[in-house]
Image 1 (cartoon, rainbow, N blue to C red):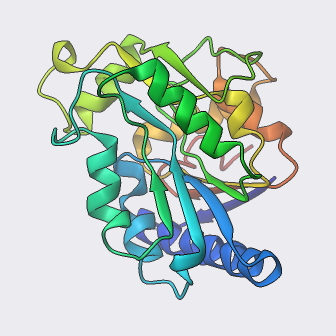
Image 2 (image 1 turned 60 degrees about the vertical axis):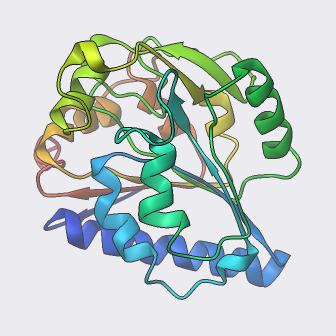
Image 3 (image 1 turned 180 degrees about the vertical axis):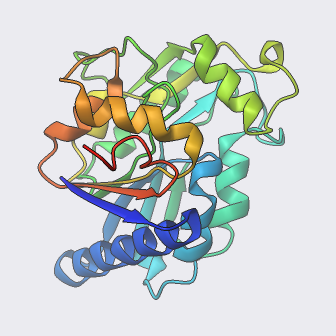
Length: 244
């Protein structure tokens, strides 16, 4: 585990993007291609803004994403597919983007996405941490045992409130109750994991992640068991751990 603390979110995002670029370029140099999983949310804005400016041969990068609400079309402002298309996928020429499609036959979509994901190992996972300590949409208590690649999950109240607080919805009642999420086990199969977790609202989740033993009640504690995990914080998100 490597923890990096920057003065602000913009600086943290730039440093994380630099490491992401180095990991991808090294992988492309050795294997001729790279496969990554990416997360979304307001905490990733600065990272993506910096990442699209990095010198990476994107035509050799295959992109998967973590999760998506059930019941939202890709045109909805809160859709994570829309988020990634606008802030990442449409700005760089990636080889292929595998979005979590929750329109139509969801079971079929999960089956096809899982099949694509498991064709080869995933080199890098960009995995955020939620206010409630979730990774992807694996809210507490998370399922640490399933080895399905993607699962249907129920979002808890704190998770849904976070989406309102970030401005994606007008009220909690507007936030879908269910989503498709990459499982915790599948996330942990990424060869390298980079977590970009800025902002004061994440400070207690960061504290619980780093000071609590492995528990599904704080799903992000699982990240501490990964052999190659990097955690990028700013002074706000690190405010509860600086004196540890």
